[in-house]
Length: 353
Image (tube, rainbow, N blue to C red; front, side, top):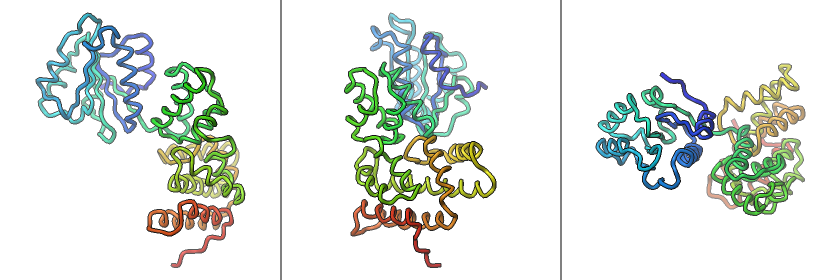
């Protein structure tokens, strides 16, 4: 059985134009799978004969006869054909049997891309005879690398480190939203380097007024600065009262974890390393900014938060989350403003037993 490959395998294949007979894309990140399918098709198919030699089918719609005909058709005036089977996990029994038989002796002039939807369990019978690649949800630590890669390789432009940070804090970790903003940015700059000024002009966010800056103010318990930024932050792309409470909850929990770790003797680089490990174990937790900035803030703030303050803050966060989901007279901004005051003042009332 072949091991699951790394996405770097795709980069090498596209660069050298030497492809494995079949690839199996699976995992929770449908956006990245779709992007890689597009890149693979562009790299493998001759543009002049693409209409004849590229075909997309869906596992839920195709029967064994149609699938067999599709993958057995020879290329027309080209080196290879490309067939993409989406929802491969939904193939009916006879179509799946036909696919399994084909994979035992794949055609040398066909590139077969098998794509499973998010939520589908990895199919071990496909991992064996294909080059299998898992597309996981990108963590906050990997988003900046994705932004830089997309700008340089897809948009043929460049972006400053500050612009990357500012954009991520404004648009979050939604790759489709980031792509939309980056496409607008490269059009705005005319292909020149994307800098912080460009991000401010296009996305509507300025340095010092991002979600990360707001979270920093709460972490250092500065209600005046946090309340000044709150309405600005709530108007930014992908921001809402709900996502703000999510980010504040993640920050509070990690500050509490760091505070307890300090009591156990952790500090400095060791503490930062432990916080990065905690984020990796937690999966796709919403931090509101890059992991590096998040970890730095939580480690630094853990000196000024007590375990009692953390408990009170978590109680306030729960109260606000409940209020946001209920019918209410207060606006979202009012509810989050009251939350900020409780977090920064550490005067949250104790819940009745």
